[in-house]
Image 1 (cartoon, one colour):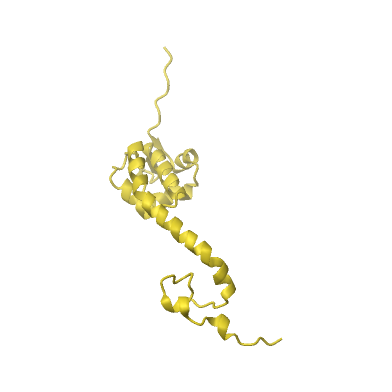
Image 2 (cartoon, rainbow, N blue to C red):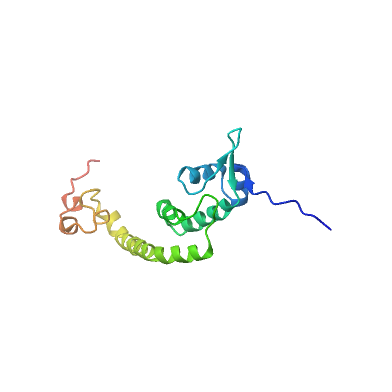
Length: 154
């Protein structure tokens, strides 16, 4: 009978990083943010449970969709230190995030539509810029620096 070696339940920083497709610094960053967990060996080396592989995949997929790490952390907070997210968790989280993503799409489309007028207006004013302050009535109706131009000296 052929016996296979038991799967290693714990991974080093480098092993987790390599298998997850991220830099070791990203693994440490995710741990610092409380998104993944490790234990320390007697030599003070980090060891990660294999469940952290799926957590890192969840973090990367969520981040690729533009979800802030704080929101990702809120979803992962319900898990223990050796549990990985389930497909059901992803489905539930993604449904919650759709409204947020749609709001950001609307904001980006609005910014795109204002970009041409903003770059050409010449106001360079943080307080009256329609792009930076879309709900500011004064910014929408004010004179703007383009109407108050000072002749340039050559």
